[in-house]
Length: 170
Image 1 (spheres, rainbow, N blue to C red):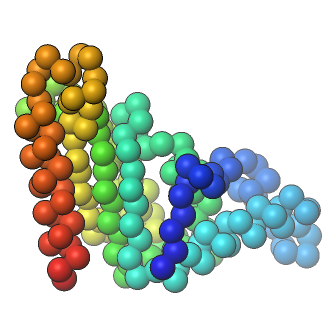
Image 2 (image 1 turned 90 degrees about the horizontal axis):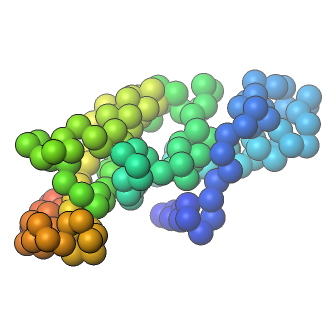
Image 3 (image 1 turned 30 degrees about the horizontal axis):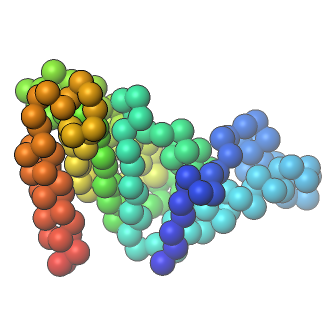
C-alpha cells in the first residue's frame, strides 16, 4: 500500500517539458525530460499496482485543489493509463465547508465531482465511489455559526463514516 501526501510532497504542476517527455524517444530526452518522465512513471506505477485508489479531497474554491490536479496530470499517459484503469476501484472521500446538497443555495457549485468523473472516464474508470462530508465549517465560520448547523455537520460526518464502514465490510 502506498500513501502519497500531496501537501507534504507536492507534485510539480505540469509544464511543457513534462507534457512532451512522453512523446520523445527516451534516447533523445533532455535531462529535464528524463526527470519529468521518471516522476510520472513512478506515480503511474503506484496507480497501476493498486487494487483500490483512495483519494481524499477537500473542496477549494468550488473545485479540486491544484495539488491533486498536478498529480492527475502526471498520471494521464496515452501509453500506460488512458482507457486502461477501468478494473481498478476508485474511492473519493470529500470534505466541503458549506452545504452543496440539492435544495441548498449552493447546489451545483461543487464542480469537483463532475470534473473528476469526466477526468477518470478518460482513464477507463466509470464507477467511482464518492463519500461526501459537508458543513465542516459550520462551527468555525463566522458566517455559518448563527445558522446553528452543528447537528447537520455531525450527521454528515456520521453518514460518511457509515458509508466508509460499509465499503470496508465488502
